[in-house]
Amino acid sequence: MDARLNGVVLAMLKAARAYVEKGWCRGAMARNARRVAVVPDSPSAVMWCASGAVRRAGLDLGSSVEKVNGCHNLLMEGLSDREKAWNWSISEWNDRNSRKKEEVLALFDRAILKLEGTSGSQEGGL
Image 1 (cartoon, one colour):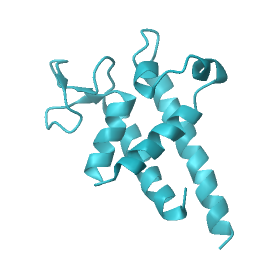
Image 2 (spheres, rainbow, N blue to C red):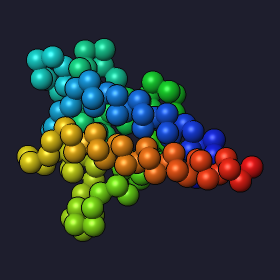
Image 3 (cartoon, rainbow, N blue to C red):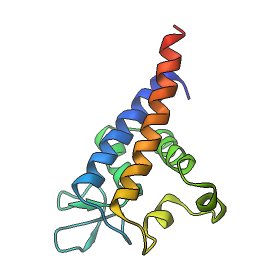
Image 4 (spheres, rainbow, N blue to C red):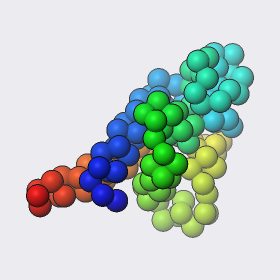
């Protein structure tokens, strides 16, 4: 991923994490205050799954599908080897009954730290 793309993906990950921190859900990309499923960019959305938050952040920032996929790929890289072995999508991982909001936030944190480390090493080489 080039430095410019890294910067946009990093901004998306941080924005998506903020959405999850505001409100998190399972079983839908987003939900309103009544817990009814809505599209991620709905004005009534108050909670998002990990994938829905990435999509919302991508829409907010006018990002391309490539950048949304970059976010999903970084989140996938943050899964444990055991979780990767199940071959789950981020939505499937998010929607597990045992999943907790803190785990979702921690996954975003790992992806953000990884990307910040990559960006830092690229900037140092300029």
